[in-house]
Length: 442
Ligand SMILES: [Zn+2]
Image (cartoon, rainbow, N blue to C red; front, side, top):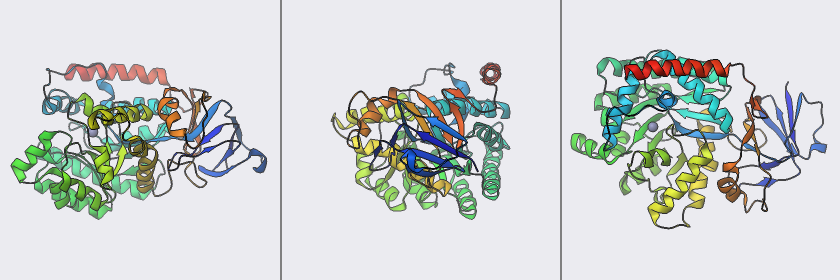
């Protein structure tokens, strides 16, 4: 039995209310937070004692929508200037993903997972595409996840955009991985059934995916109403909005993720709320692609569960949260709106999503929750208490450096040094080499 004591730090629980606990130590036992109490009340012996003086101790972050595969695109320009979202897809992402090999896929994941450790993001919900190398792709990502020590929920984004064979392979890849995942019950890995977006999926494919997903007992992870073009294409071809159409095929609902939901009307919001679908807001990506800014305030007002993802723009969740807050101020033309709604996405809804996917508490600093814990260098220059904690997170802790990252009770980084069995220099060299080849093929 492994016992780690973290003492002398300031504990931030996240969740609602976000509490600040002074004078408390935290005991990790066998991958769980076993005790939060004054150090004198926690008897030894311990395998490790970590001194968190001058640091805040808080749960690792959850990223609710991510694409590991986009890592090797860093620095690559689009094939042609893109004037709208459809051109961003055809000039960049759909050209790129077709060229990915299984090695590219694995190395992309390895690189970005190391960055996630550095930024204190310990759980990631990924959405993968590599139409030229579908079969076995999720296993290769899972291998990278295992080596990183982090948690990830994986899926393959099925789409009809690359022809019937690739569609069939996508369906098969999701089903095979989800089956293996449920058999293995590995606490690091979970599966959802991935779909690209309604505008690249036929009714027949949606029905096949729904049947497989329901048989496996898992939810779906799909882009929904990211750009206005998704809505107009679905209305034109099927006479239904993406939300209505996916719901009609049994795709949305409890345990499913609808990424984006930028262009949803009142009926769509009502459907998402009624079905208990998790909407994941990705503000930096939406701003970058100029597709619009989701009306988070209205979604929340209508009881839609809204979490926060990065769509691969970053793995630094507090950075994404800040942008989400500024973007909502601009959208609502109100500089003081939305603070609770936006902070709830990261500190309340994302932990709820991870807890639902994994089946045990993740993302809160509570006894018996998963020991996914980070230590951040932060000596507050203004009073830090329950009433000011969220302000410190957004304006101060977001700018601070993560010192130590622990996931499932395993120390992955300590004093800013990675403690996993991986040669980082060799990995980045390999990544540059693979990127070179990928860019040539692109
Ligand atoms: Zn996405």
